[in-house]
Amino acid sequence: MRKNKLLRFLMNHSIGGLHCAALRKLRLVYDESEAQAQSRLFMKAALGADTQTLLMEPEREVDDESAVKLFEMLARSIGREPSAYITGIKEFMSLDFIVDSSCLIPRPETEILVEAVIDYSLKSNKKKIRILDIGTGSGVIAVSLAVYLSNAFLTAVDISSKALKVAKANAVKHKAVERIEFIESNLYEALRGKNVFDIIVSNPPYIAYGDQIDQCVKDFEPENALWCGESGLELTEKILTGARDFLTDDGFLAIEIASQRSNETKALFDKNVYKNIKIIKDNSNLDRIITASV
Image 1 (cartoon, helix red, strand yellow):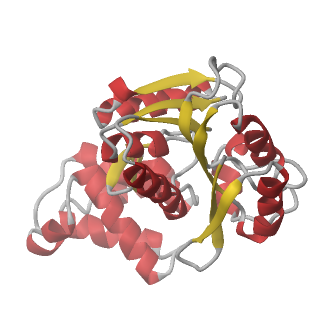
Image 2 (tube, rainbow, N blue to C red):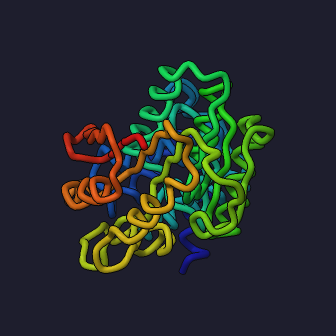
């Protein structure tokens, strides 16, 4: 059956024909706007055909290998696999990052976290900024900070060796590898030295076991990057408790949080006697980032 579907699909040898065939498949599971967006994304990834090519050269012929690649991408998308895992690329902070199923897909909300660190760093006027990224995942936070802050030197830790492999590849891709040290570590466990970082930044797992999340997130993204116990606060509390041993006397802390638990999270900052506590909202006007100083 699958072979027959593939053979019928390959009959559409032009870019325009494959685009129409892709849309027919995607409309089975997505609304029109999402089907159009997914089709353009996969056409570009599989065929190298951007929107202008679709419009200006619909009759251009496509080789079988590229058409088969497109067919496989569509099959995965219809199965609700996230498009970032299908293409292996996700844009973040206007940069293209490598991603796979070993790490969380970067979200726009996390860009606000990175922007908060950049803003603080620029205002600090320090010649050298030492930053610790806890739970680096695909490395989007650490690499973005290295790209946009030329005076930043980073240590990026993660408990997952597979995620660190992706993070290192992204550092190489964006020519930031010389200013980022990657360490396999459960939070602070493998770190040496005290009070050495000007900034600690983290987007830790913060979903509680009782929280409702999208089924595709639950099905495809790594559990250890999502779930965090009954309260969703366990890792955030450990980060806050340990941060004082690694931050300088005027150190800065920035953490992404669950919006529905912003009050409880702020209470943890208060409990650990942090100063200048600030809550930053995301583009949906939800509490998303907390920053503070020692």
